[in-house]
Image (cartoon, rainbow, N blue to C red; front, side, top):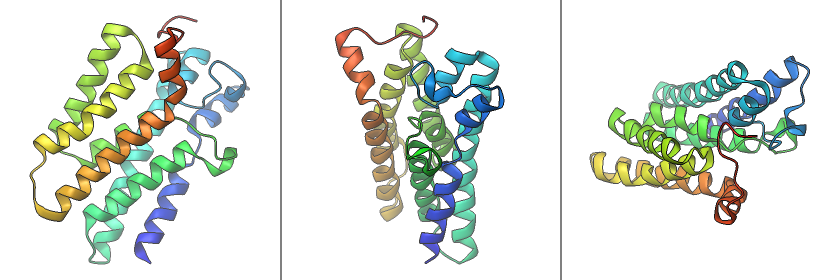
Length: 205
């Protein structure tokens, strides 16, 4: 029952559509502009860096804080905080990607996943994820490609770096694979455009 409580609370926190709310506060329906995605990248392209970074911070923070809350609730009931954090993390990402408030159409979850990763894994794993994103973005200027590559690096880094301590290791490794798979799934259209050479580079209309 506690696991279900954590999942429900985390889903609704994750489902807060930060990009939509921020854009609406400025009289813009972000779903009608740019890529029509409510994520930070589209907000940045349509409305500028100030609003894009604000949305990124909101999405990142809800991922980070939700994991901490899930672990805290689990620990309060003498349950595994690792399991509580993982359940909270997945529910939060799914809430962001499929928000109930916008007909289950949300963002692609990279900013929220970043917050989740920071709260769930050792800092060296976080650095591997972030470094992969920065290097690929710097070389190609494709946000989508950088996000996909960073997602692919995550389970590799977890497998190589996180101490293999029984069930918790395999839970975290499986969790990292799930994050990777979900990120790739949400970027299907971007992958098609990358293969066709029609994906937009960052900074270009």
